[in-house]
Length: 537
Image (tube, rainbow, N blue to C red; front, side, top):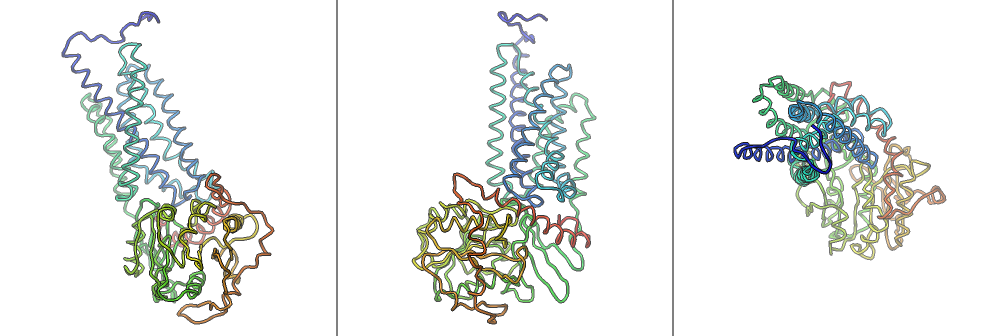
């Protein structure tokens, strides 16, 4: 057919009202497919970012990889979809692309774990990129084919191409908007990661699958074979004589695990967020933590009289709340993930003797009109620091919540020297730029990779000589002032002032994140795999 630019010719002939009515229904059906396709793209992107968190964290590098692979998959899909419009069976290709994309969505949680178990020992950039290329690229490439094919079938005249393309991309984007809010705000926090992606995969597949069966394309039913692996692969061995996983859930902060370790005579319970150790409880003495930095916190609480008011950002397993309760504080706790509160109560013997606030820490600081004597920031995770809480502006904001003699305690990485200590030194420099004084306390008897630093920020000088470092069970060990790291050991080394408009802490922390991931994977991963707990990593 010869087409003149000045005289558009019809690509399809519609001759009677009944055909016209049927075509309107067909258009609505295609619009509906575009809507759920857009939602599927956004669901894949959100879920994939959370799937990689237990293995590679949630740093800027991870998000850059997720966005890059997403765009690469869609780009290839758009190109292949355009080529497919030339085929006589392009309508069948459209429905098969949707069904195949749905199959990859259903299998995504299992493909992701299988892949990342084999790439987590690589560098962060390479490991996360290869993993996403394996389990995220295929469904997005197939979904990218959908819009060009739908536009092709909607267009009956050349002068309708622009309108058809604009409408389809608008409908698809609207589906993505609905998915972004619903999946991000409600679905993942309620159902975790595996169930939503599998359910959406079935929704994406069912309508084109019915269409293909009606066209006698029975081979498309191979999609149903994906249900079997999704059921069988969900059965995991979680227990052994020395290690057992008591709880696993997925949600807003990623994956949470509660793990029991029983190596006589030591028995402990651990809270892990994205497979990084967050808290540890001595099972025989649940009121106390075996970590030395927790004792440092308890000693610093003795600076304040009974009845003082405390704010804790980040509940964890409730170690600090237990300490504050013993010291007679009135405690407010801000926790962004309500699952953490539930886990702390159910598995770590924390009682509801504090005020719970489900909110982001920075948002609470900006909106609260409370005053506190002690503020504890324990939001630090192994894979990424909360940089929005550690900027100059954040330290300026928190000052309005601090009484004149208040102290801010920040739990952070044990590194303070060299390249791996750059993030810690930059936090100290930022505190001082906010017109606060800063002191670092740590158990210097331990190497930097096995300790935590407590960074103190305050208005007035502290008399730490009068504060006893309390060991397990309350036994006095030594003077806390002996735990202060001298400033001359790090003061002249490179550091930066961290600002909201230049968020570089994630980048500064990257070498440390890689090192912690390596050590974490070696110690925990090897122990659990030796005991048959493949699901741990």
